[in-house]
Length: 315
Image (cartoon, rainbow, N blue to C red; front, side, top):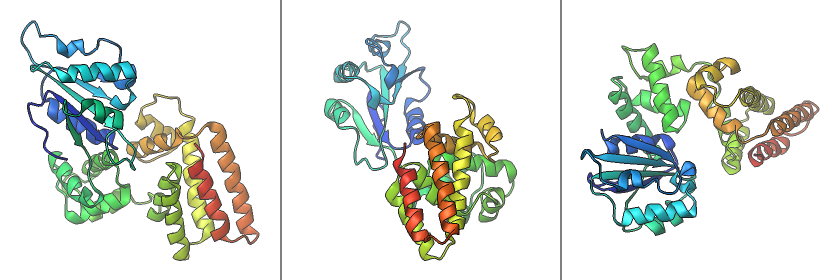
């Protein structure tokens, strides 16, 4: 990310990680009292909270999250405010985009170009280990380069999940901190990494990536029944998570679903929300049928791609 001007009155941050967007927004907003509004909850006239001068002269700020969900009137109101912003206030907006997006939402860019500082917020894959070490240091946790790489390989690339994993490791290994050994010890039994990556891609709807993982596993002569077993295990976890009432804290979700970590529950919740209960039941029936086919001699490289494509395509 580039350096946003410290005194910029209007800033648009965009990226695929809500966690990174919020962390960056908090740094920009500083200590000023902040009014936080969701884009989907915007109502006409809300910009007056920062547009009008303060009676007591204190600085004010607004954090507008999910700005991509603003309706036409909301966008026009924000664009009008950004044309002549209150110099004693700060407006920071965040827009969440898909992993494949190459820029901020087009409507936002067109309406705010020249009126706001627009910045991408992201950590590239190759930079994640360094980010992990920096994040660990900020939390007072010593971290080795090998430990940071091991955490990324074990937990994945989601910064929010990595941050929670740092907390998990530091709680269990306060003195040693984040090393390859402590990562292995903390996440032992977490599941085969290849299966984990395959399931993550499939259940978020990334069919091409999931099929690439599957192809690599079959080429390495991983057993089709073992692969199917890993997929079935993830599906069972998602069914349990999907049944938990909405709004249940992640810690309680993890306890009910028999998961080890709060961040694991958060990830599974995100995946489970792609599906209805009927979708999950249908997928479960399909896995049972695939299991039967494999056991009577069907080829794994024929039936498993169909299963993975079905999982990624539903939702």
